[in-house]
Length: 159
Image 1 (cartoon, rainbow, N blue to C red):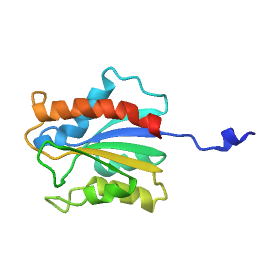
Image 2 (image 1 turned 90 degrees about the vertical axis):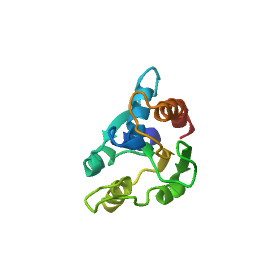
Image 3 (image 1 turned 180 degrees about the vertical axis):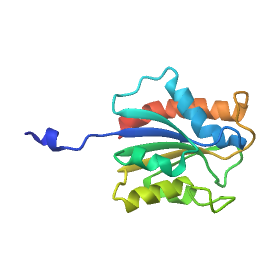
């Protein structure tokens, strides 16, 4: 056995979350759709549409060493503005804008992973401040998704 066989496998999950029917909430889903169309990614990168699965994503992320998350986020910038947060910067973006105590946020998913002893080594969030409905014709969402796909394709090489 060599040191290489003892090293844990790297597993990068590129995850898009959100609701396509509610404002720019569909941004994350549109990003992974754009990334899946025409980008060659390394074999250890899995692109996943998390939609509105909430805590059902916990087992899907349990063995991820790196997570690149696309989502609509509340941040101080103008609507339609992209923001990137890495590792320790992420919790400040994942605060709650919950409309109901029944909603599960991405912060709840990462908290569940931590409680179970599964924490990715690195987490990067690429978010957009919601501006308008995000559908196939939404210019801000489509433009943001295209830019994010470009950024995401390059990100695994830096890990």
